[in-house]
Length: 220
Image (spheres, rainbow, N blue to C red):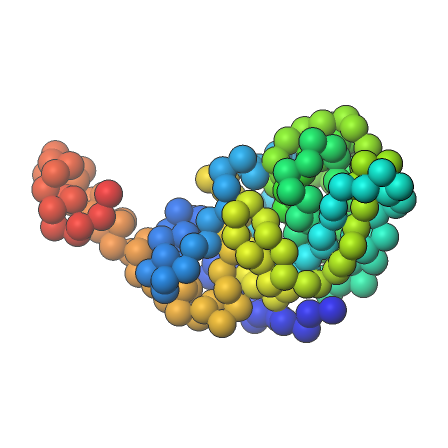
């Protein structure tokens, strides 16, 4: 189990920054942070999703049983964690209503699934605070199709390697992973991007020139 934690101030500050600015800030550090756009917001929950990753790997298997590692992650991960399930984009529901109940009672922050999610109406009705990001909505069960094989090991999620403890940030634009070692640098860079973009927007509105704003600040 990862013991990576972030201060309440760090979580609060990231929650105030768009994923677009965070993705750009990660790239300034020479890394890719954004997950593939097919992994998108299914249920928004209450605001931007921010928290350290706990990872689960699932693979195809004809003799698949229950999602043991995912259930263990939900029951044993620290409050505020983001459950990240890597299932290779499988067209089955690797997350659903019962797992959502477990996440809420254990105070996990939200879930990112490289596969489908089901019981969407139930989750939206009973757990409106829970953010859910996934590759699809699909009714199919994982039983007999895929199985979990590891917990809290590095996984490939939406084209990005996610390590346990990396910071996950997600909103309506998508999902971004911030490597744990770069969190402070990315935070400072992203806040500067937001500040400069606000100044750029004011200049465009005041002058009526989009090109002038872009030329001055060098950002599109």
